[in-house]
Amino acid sequence: RVTEYTQGTFIIDMIDPDANASVWRSVTQSKLKEETIRDQAALDSAAMRVLAGFPPGALPASQ
Image (cartoon, rainbow, N blue to C red; front, side, top):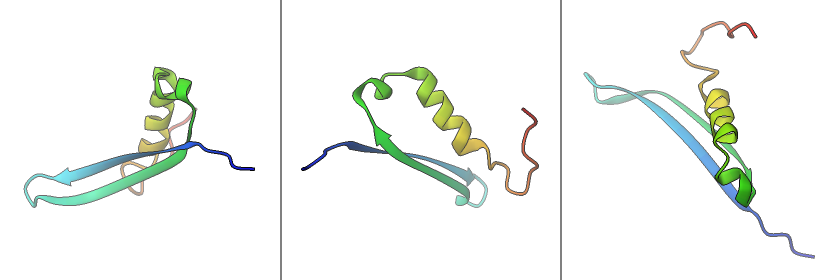
């Protein structure tokens, strides 16, 4: 049995413009369904997960 799926990768890089260097990167990956690709709420949720660790060393936001 073969199961095919699309793997999605969401990357955010924070760049220091003065040094022209990456200062922070976060990556999340997951299987994508066709309907998820067009679901703005799912994309917003992925962005929140990716940005949860920014800035480095910050305390988590209260829920």
